[in-house]
Image 1 (cartoon, rainbow, N blue to C red):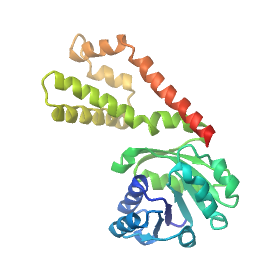
Image 2 (cartoon, one colour):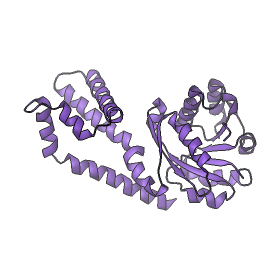
Image 3 (cartoon, rainbow, N blue to C red):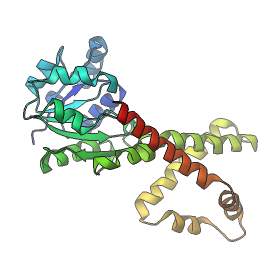
Image 4 (tube, rainbow, N blue to C red):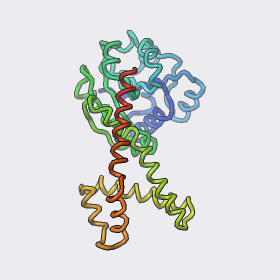
Length: 268
């Protein structure tokens, strides 16, 4: 697998991906090309990252064997039309929400396709990306994409049939955690802390708690027990959570997000 990459679309997520792979040394700036309809914006970004901006998709495709599509989903038909006849035997990596692998394979039958669902914490190298293999993609293709997105956090491989649940849990998930972090901070503010301090306490605590789950191989239940003293402060707070409706609310939040992802996928 040749370590080069061409971006079609160069917004915030594409920029984060580009920075991550360059900073990790996975792909050299000399081997990265990018196309965006806003060429002035692209040129500014390209100058900063030392990558090569190009003025059309044909020039991009002629220089790379791996193309990452990072446009808005509603312009995918234009992207596919521009790639027709230019992407044979190339790997197409799509991060477009709601656009299926089949959509690409129907329009670019001689290309290999891998779909990825990243999330916005990739912008701070703490992303969670899910990689879905296409019908013609190879083991090397999948490994290349896993390696690429692991530079932005963590990356795992799942079947595309699970992508709507992935969207609900990790794709949209950061927004749900932001809400919870904010509400805990607001409670701290009411109890006498200034909001900035309370937000720092809440956010860092959430970050640390997540890292404990990731690094200790202990279940959330085990970790709750470890931090809870019988009849102590944590036990009192846990009692409120357990006796509340929060489990139903969180389940419904994820469930409705998943259902909406299904609806949007059908409308594409």
